[in-house]
Image 1 (tube, rainbow, N blue to C red):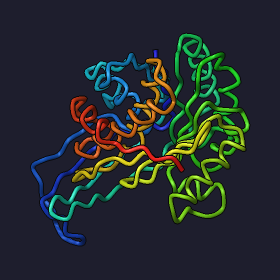
Image 2: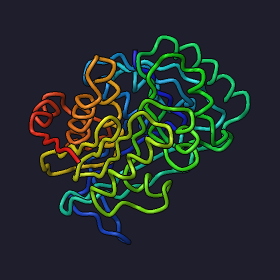
Image 3: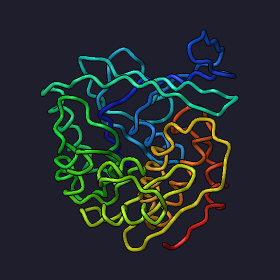
Image 4: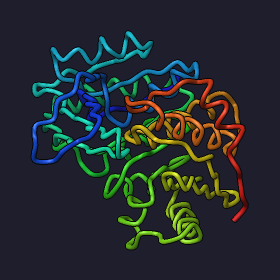
Length: 304
């Protein structure tokens, strides 16, 4: 079982427009909705690959997110919060190939909600082959919340996809793999990498700070992996529709690969294929498995 912790689930809408005109009335007949958030998107990617995904997390009542995930074959253990799940919208300009993101800040969680979530996590973590701790921390949770949970994760391999203080604290707990993008790594380490070589140096620094492996993503440029070796995974070019959730699909693909017994190198290759395929779908973290398999065969891996 693959366990994904969702602290900031989202009620996600995607609006597809032929041409988005700022400051004007924009009409479209193509509006799509799904459950979203980094952990949810990662769980979706793993489920598409055939994994048994379980999302433990905070959800608002009456928004249909748990039911939506069940329809996708994704199990949930929800802790229902007093406030609703945050809302998010992706506005896609088809003509320009641009995406505008609107994301509501998450609502604060109470001490009782936090304790209920911790209890669920501890109970489920014992059964998980791989655990994904993905996303930002909502108000009401301490910066070391992921680190605290990792201490209770048992023998499971933990992937952390976070940023800022949450990522910094998690590194000290020794995660199996961290997956920041280049911006997030730069914010933590003091300067954004301007080249692949600098991204590789930052990935190595993340390993020195506690991670066994670090995968730093750079969008269409690919992913730098550090750990036993330093490698660059370069995907083939694609015409992206929506890049929202591509990094989440990357994390979900890696988690599935590790649980399936792949090496770290091959799990990251699978993750890069999933993230790239996800860019072809309007909904975040969603893709066709056959496309990911085709892209995976075209990924070039270089030693750094």
